[in-house]
Image (cartoon, rainbow, N blue to C red; front, side, top):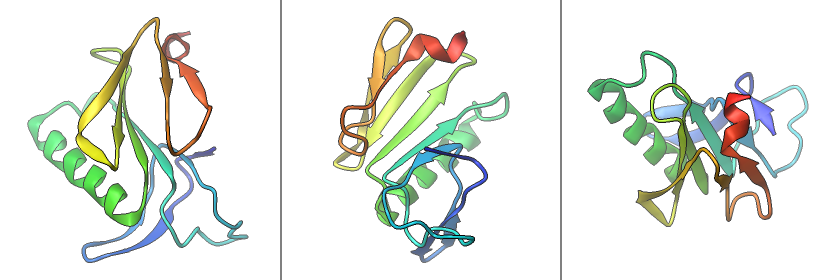
Amino acid sequence: MFGSTLAYLVDLPHRKSLCPDASWYTGPHAGAGFPAVAPVFAAEVRDDVTFSDEYEDRFIAKRADYFAAGTQVVWDVDVLREELIRVYRAQDPRNPTIYRRGEVAEAEPAVPGWRFPVDELFD
């Protein structure tokens, strides 16, 4: 699992890198460089400025970029308003699975067997 200091080099027409807030990468170790492929799992954590209509449009586009680059699962983590995790999958990118407090989120099929209690976001 990597934090937001790691960029992934991708080859999209309008974007050459992705930098998620958290990610899971299963390829070869890149040494001092950045991985030359997208992570299999990416998480984007919302802050105060990411709840506008403009941001929604940008997040939809960024999520599409993740999937176009090969990411299997993208989390939209909302700890400020609805206190939930929306789990988007490449095979059905318009219909997220939503996990709320008291539930356990997952990142299938990108990270098989890994689970995360939503309540841990607030402890």
